[in-house]
Picture 1 (tube, rainbow, N blue to C red):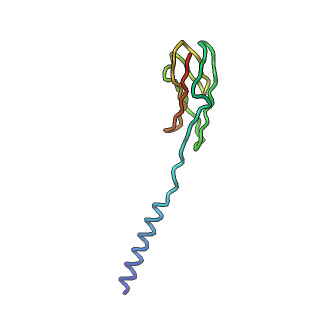
Picture 2 (cartoon, rainbow, N blue to C red):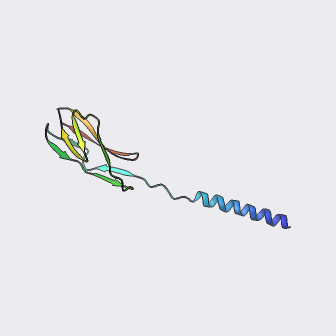
Length: 102
């Protein structure tokens, strides 16, 4: 009888441990959106894009697929030469894009 009680207590402890281990919070989903999906900017001119980040306090990291056409600095897009490029705002694995025509 004593062995049965001990075995039952061990079994209950294992079940409880498994339940506690599986009760993790869902990971926070990080999202990024831009206020414009496309943008026209003249050579030598500037325009501003605004990124909205959800699920994180991190700031967006900005990049241009072709800096010879347009550059971006903290959301300020500058037209360099005639062409098209994509501007990206990235936080972690989340990314939003804007098609830029110069």
